[in-house]
Length: 484
Image (tube, rainbow, N blue to C red; front, side, top):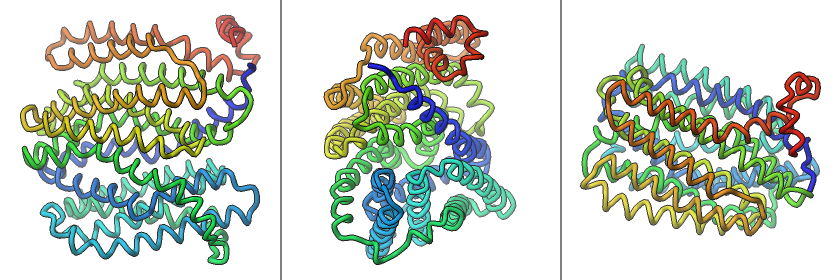
């Protein structure tokens, strides 16, 4: 069945635009890691990370994940009045939920690591929720350039606030949290005004029927989001319990290098979710999913192999010497992150088909596997145990989702491709456990092998997107084009 070239062009055009915004909102933030590791001790970094992760847990519970509904139902809306109803209903649900959240703060403020930070945590959740809703709704309006500019603006403010609060005023953990709060608040206000979202606010447009429909869609996403959070952050609380805040600070930094992969994937994922919804039910979508999933796999494998190649020198340059131990654990988390990205990609099938209950089932499996393994491994193996548990959980859920989603949309995949590339990444992970210049010879060879195995899928997509005039000057591109 013929593949619609415009679908690919729109997907990668949006990806490029989102990349500009993500470069602002994510990649540049990575530059702040040396600042954080020099301004905060491992114990302080571990503590403030727990505060931020607590906010991430509270966010889906008290907003009911309405930001997800804003994208899904916003893209489906056909008229201005329908879009107004979507935003007004989401905003009303979020505000009501966040107001109710105040009732639990006298209880959670008793947690030791939240001592003195409960008021900041409450504001943190509010500003994060508003930014998430506004930025997601702007995407549903297909104002992707505005979304990208907001990412750049938010990063600029984040950098300014961090330099001001951590370096000049030396406010430590309080300054870290204030920088995030103020940048999120600024983003929310900017989008509300520049996108004209104030025109989309109307209590008369809030529909009980629409709210019920949205909640049926969102309800499974709340525990789904929580379970993914449990899978990704439960190790931080368990490490703190058994080994203390300082070791959790090392663990937090170990996650920073894999963040390079999630940052790049997010640029693509934001555009892909829109394409998956818009292509839902279209002719040839199975071919579209097959090609894009194959491309996504190839790109992630190459990127991960590159990250594993530079893991040790990057850690030496990037973070304070107190955190250099993190280089031993980040390779395992890098492999886990690859499968996290695959799981997010496959989750778009559930979003497009509104089968969010199946997303919950797979997330539940990940949460159970992760928690059980964390309690079994962390007391004895520390951060190695936590990283291994995370990899096992994401790896298991990947195969479950792969076979489950292929029943909904019959796209094709290669088990051999997964096996060979995963073996290469694991071999590079093992090599990173050794020191010495000798390891870079086999690491470089494995990187080149991963690149050689996956380059054809990358070139195939490029051949489809390049203008004909350019392809005429590159004969090998025409060979890939004809295969399509």
